[in-house]
Length: 84
Image (spheres, rainbow, N blue to C red):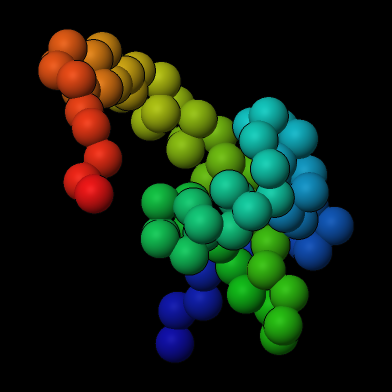
């Protein structure tokens, strides 16, 4: 049986620590972990993150283009009247 080497629990990061590193909310970290975009370790009911996985996520995110929405007028200049 081959067991993957894992760092000691004190070296693992929790949601709050990862959120501080990435500068986002804990909910965002939860969503990233749930979607599989940010690998997480489950220890019983606890969820922890390996520092190396967080660093890999940051490096991979730097390669992505910025997401912007195209600017368009809300109603294309037409007058919108409510239907009576």
